Image (cartoon, rainbow, N blue to C red):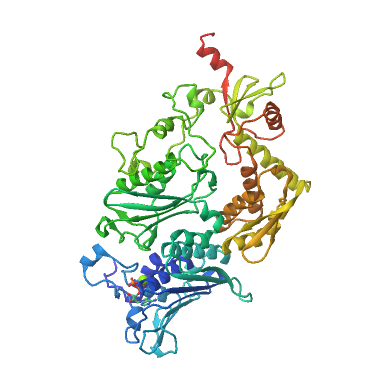
Length: 605
Ligand code: ADP
Ligand code: MG
């Protein structure tokens, strides 16, 4: 065994950097936190090549004195903490004194700073080598530049994704921070290649109301439709905005949680949000939520995650119940304008009621909720976070499905099929060997998707020009997405053109989309593109996202009454579609109750 030795400081820093600095987005986050802790009114962020080549954050906050500059980049040196007791009441975003030292270890870091009435100075740390403090003619505040991230750590650099992917993560980090601090003006610009010109992705004026900040980030169309929520149990308060059920999303991209000016992740709380929408959203769809929590500093521990992405609450189940109560009372008090109705009160699951996967939720949904107060103890609130944190297990397939051959083996019925619509959401038909119950939305979505895909592939897509183009007001990041993916959209029949400023117009849509507003389709598609491109999706996957988004928005919904002709057409269409027994998300489109099983149940055999 080699002897035990104390590690040199640079190795310690490099190890810490492994925890704190994962990618350009982590640099953006740490530098923004430092800037915010300095009490500025404005923060400007510039990136080059997704932040790999450069991250620059400029604030007009308090600044750092020339004497303190070397300390700022030293590990475990901070102005925000003095004693261990301070850890229990942290009022700043930073406190570990690690970020600048870690970043300086794995990149070239330059800080320029000046305090009001003082002289400006600068310092550079390059791959852990500390330079001299030199005079600098900068304005009051601090500018921090990080160049060539992981330039001296090839093993880490190899883990960075394409600049475009890093850019979308970095932009996300910016958005989360900007959402947490509406009162401060922010801007974000990006130069995507060495030759290109920088483009402004966000320009956010200081806002008075949180909704205004949400609007400048995500557009007025979205922000104006949000529902305000608020609840308080005497110690903990939650407030913010949630989306209407019909404004659901393909991803959880617009679910944001904040505590004490800090964005954080928490699966249990997001589970409570989903639970509140139970019965109002289709499986796999995600609600919009912007929620902030106010609670005493000793009720939350922020020192549990090296990159401060997670926090620990003293009483997590209390937050869970509060969120659930706040959202449910909002929905039950009406005014959401939703078309989907909560499932009716159901008896305990039997063979018959198990057809609706969400039937057991109905009892909880229909339970009365006390307005404004803490959630009553005796009501059937769902499992507390400990149990809820793990994703709910998929319901066991009904018995008749398990002991039957796979649904793929359904034979066409001998006679003409007639479907009967029930509850405005299911269609029941006689099938070759039993009775089929079809989910009208899932099946229609599948049919539309397959048709769109086939006609795009053969170049035979029927495109319908719009007599009156539809206008859409988009935030800068989405404007960029639309521009970037305009060719893919056009291949799929949607022509989207710039109309000056933040406005685009949609001038055509695929005829298959029927009378679904083109703007709804564009929104859905953008949502999916944003999620897919931050995951680094390939172009062919992206066009598939476009088609999925279209099919999803254009399909008939649960709750839409259908004429007999429409029911018949849907049943007929499904024979033309391969694998029609699953919707594009993989949910089943139909369940089969076999004749053999029916005979057995009625004791005919
Ligand atoms: P921490 O933020 O945890 O204290 P950092 O390494 O991020 O640790 O920063 C070290 C110190 O440098 C901070 O405590 C702060 O005093 C100073 N500092 C960093 N960035 C800024 C800034 N933008 N404005 C003023 N002071 C700063
Ligand atoms: Mg810091």
